[in-house]
Image 1 (cartoon, rainbow, N blue to C red):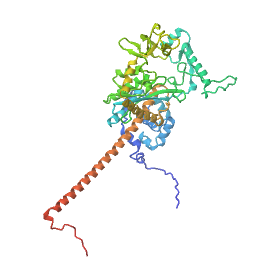
Image 2: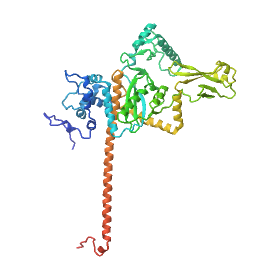
Image 3: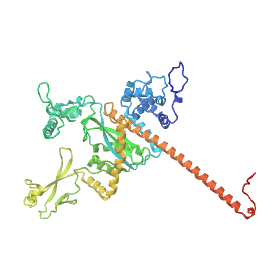
Image 4: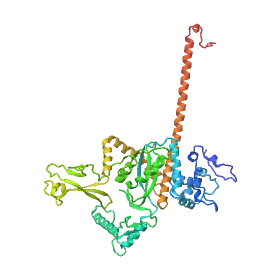
Length: 531
């Protein structure tokens, strides 16, 4: 017979929130795993002794954790989600009939607390992971990702152009991000004009040239640069792009991951117009500090070629950190047909049939991209009559010139390390890839780090720290649950072995007892009643 359920509300309910949530609920386990009471002391300096009471700091951070655990980016949606979930209400200590804080309270409190409060919570979670043996500390893998800023490309405006030298001096003293020099603006415009002309011949141009405005003029996309444009909506956001991705305003997020159980040991954000190598020192210092506080030393560092630079390699050598970073594409371990004489600090030509010219050191100079190089050059008298001049120097050039980075020694040392044991170097590449890249994918797609909902570099740093500590908390809870199951399995297996041993011992004693001659004449078999 078909049944039908009808709902009849009662006047009074005798129910407790704790009775509705099972003991193995995720938020129950999360609340039992970490003690949030240290946050009261960490946030005490942000409040006075008078006035209305604020939101409980523990409640604020618990609500934020719920948002990152469920990949919720909007504060409005987050409060709505917390209000509808009974287990979340129990987690944040709000009863069924209690009203939750307003979404604006969450936004204002997030801006009120400094980065050190979020960092202290990250370190507390990291300490839990260390206590369970989840971090080895020997090898850390580093990688970066762009985080979309809360600002549109349409918000970009052109920086004010400074025409005279006095205005340029004032700009340097102010260190303003909203002004640029006429020289810089001219160079950027020339580069954009070249791009506009070069892209016309492409089979599938990235813009349509047949669009016209109301006056009949062609509409072309504007080329923007961090040197000439900024966003007044979020002045810390930077225009950046990766291959296959759209140009947009981003922040630059970095994480360091331990290779033992893929726990994040360091996380921070930076400006998106920087290269990876320029941000390496910041993440290494932060990771080393976090590990040292737990009695762990950083020994090895793994990174991709984007982190390769002379300054970065020099810094790692000074810190005595063994790094495995592939050298960038412009590096040349040796020059074909030339050898370098370290004692005389010069290059020597060894090509057969040549004039054996000497390339003497001529000094150091910085190119337009900011790289400082050492220049070695031969004299025209040595090369102008050389039979190999055209294929070596070119048709019009009468001398040979070689440019080396001022940090070539560090590049050579890294190249030697990678080629001395190529099997181990390839293994380190695989270890880096399988350690840090899945973690970044999880952070971006499932832990709310894809887009920052606030504005400013400090708020972006808080965002990265919260996403990282949420990931570590999930790893920690899964790790202790797995360990508990393993221990229970070991105990049950041990009990089974003991039971088998006792049964075998009793059986052997019985056989021994029956084999004694004094009992051979006695029938110890059970009697059978045939009646």
